[in-house]
Image (cartoon, rainbow, N blue to C red):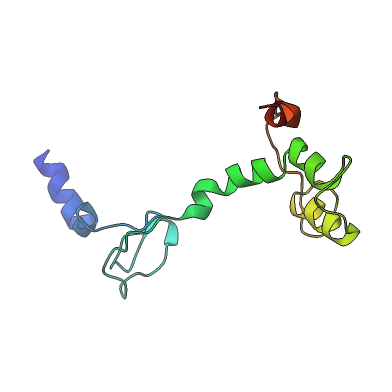
Length: 121
């Protein structure tokens, strides 16, 4: 234990044992970070923030791009999007139609209940 501790202090960066990290795991106030991470020497203090994009991005996309939401937005007896330009933007944003912004399709889980179950409650 003692040998490993001394070797770590000699060849490693002991500041990493107690220095705060940002939401990506980079050490605040240190020049070198994992995987050639950013130089944060000018940012010694941790700011307590929450990266909402990384937390809810996939959930929001699954909701907004689901088959039921597509039905509600673009099809049915009274769709919410009536202008073809807006329909095309929605379909492109969800990668439901081929466009320059999409490299593939967004995988969303199948909704077992459907909109009929929601509207019947």
